[in-house]
Length: 175
Image: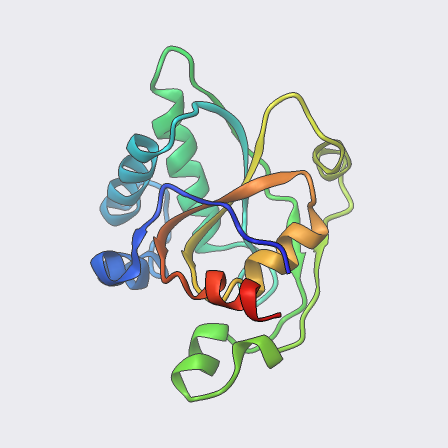
């Protein structure tokens, strides 16, 4: 199984509260969302990219869309900034992997499909565009969601996230 390139993230233990609060960030201007976006923008070495929010367990991207817009704003504040948000992924509705894990279940056993939306931007980003493509998520944990997104959008170079548990590294070695 392929490894996941996680960028901008801090260890989950350090940002657990932020990651949980982001789920309530209904706008990209929410102070928590802005704080997380600034921290990510300071930690990544690039300013020019496409940002693709990871879809929620309901189907569309919700809080990750707000985070992606806030990260793009932060990257674009720089003279060399050129970040675009492209909301092109959707998933089948499925149980929340976080809730499955909390209840003692196996998140990798939850079957769902992530696919590109039928839109020109999705076709464009599926081919390797001139700027790098990054997925945007609040936490990378088991890697189940990230791998489903990377399968749907293989041109993505990695996942920009607020937190990283590191479990996905163990999962990539086991399988």
